[in-house]
Length: 236
Image 1 (tube, helix red, strand yellow):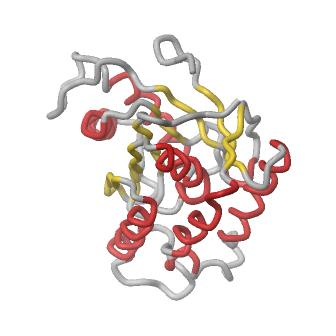
Image 2 (tube, rainbow, N blue to C red):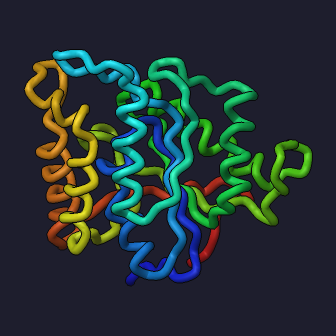
């Protein structure tokens, strides 16, 4: 079976500026190559990820880095501008993401697993799921018009694959070079690779892609599970 993203509109909802590169950029790139419209919604501004030598105006630096990465991918970028560690499942943030959905009008959402290690990741996953039905509800008011139907939602793999049982894999073997170039845009994060409390991101991304690829019989893969909630499941 081969997934075909032709005519889809695929939006990744992630917590931090480099999360898409680690977990779903290959799938976004593959969708783009099929002719899909692709977008990335980054809810937090990355201001909490300081390297050993602190960077002034880190949020602005990380905004420029994610802009550069999104341009490489050809993705529309949406920013929540919320400080790291303060992301919450509250009504204002639900409506903020609902408005992003209504502006981009996705047919497919890629979201953090609710079992991921980082609090911001887990909250981002909850918000992505809530907004997936808010966006089609006429009772939830934002500036833009509701979608005619809720988008499909796929849960992404966790960072380092901890506690995640894949439901299916997307072959991203032909897009690893692009993933690496996108990750290289995040220089402020790459500068943290020597920090003992932080994982070298490039090694982490390569190892995870290879491990999931080995499980799926390809060179490199990204893993997902479909969200099967009532009214949000679809046949393919």
